[in-house]
Length: 434
Ligand SMILES: [Zn+2]
Image (tube, rainbow, N blue to C red; front, side, top):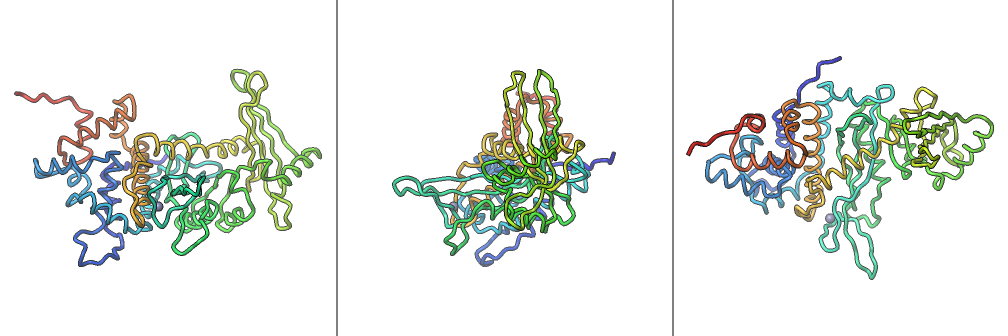
């Protein structure tokens, strides 16, 4: 067992600072008083505390105490005005900001935390999933995707394709840089998830040349052109394959199973349930001449009355046998973690991902999304690695209560560091003599 390196708030904040300070700045220097650091860090802090009114409280502390927590904990020299923050972030270079996802992952790897996520022969499971993070009838920007509703009414929206490292037994999800599904300047054709999928696969491989990766995705991805991209990127895959999308594949499976090439494993589970695994190796994905042969597997759960309560089917490049079939099913099913534990958390657990912090004319909406995802990622790392954070979190019955306490403490007292604030929350209460 390796000794795991502690990654606390201040260490992570320093990593963010380093990256924010290195952001390329193409703005007219005569008009820019401050670099990107303070603006990025301010946006990040708002998302970190999930508090849209954070700046107002810190300005109040600054006025009364001549000091504030954004300065002590986040190294923000001066708190930007709200309108200035939006203007600057709208022009911010998104690619520079996205590099932090690599910095974080690299640190987790160095600190031996990534080992927890190894799955099937040292691979990392990486689900892909698309989601809307903004939608409106009125507000829009040139990057908005459009959908025509009835009576010529147009709905504007922004979509993102998200990749993350997950493990079926680990609660925390480690997001990678998101890939926007967006209309590029001058292009009439709308972008789509599968194209974003090809871009993200290329970028992930470029940023992580040696990582052993298994991409998982829904039925949209189990098509030959996308499989070709995965092969080029030297990645394995577990992709949902439904009978409605893969008529010829399912015909092959039926025929070969009839010839005795199929395999089956039935396991009796508690409460009379049954887990039924079926697989077959070396079947063509489709009827085309250059179609790849791959492995196919199905999984069903039957309850005590024999009713099917779950079923799904997948294709993979990994040869299947009795020793790995259960893990392959677990890997295929772990895709829900990105849907439930990432997107739903961002939308419903206080991150206000769809809350309109401002849409902007260029990048604002995306920059706020990325900062929000970074705040989520930072929380995931603290949950995973930071003893002080874990100890403090244990004192509260719910995540909501925990963050209410942190926001409240952060608003009314100035602390020299995050760690001191957390120790104060864990520590004995104060008596203020009259
Ligand atoms: Zn837009």
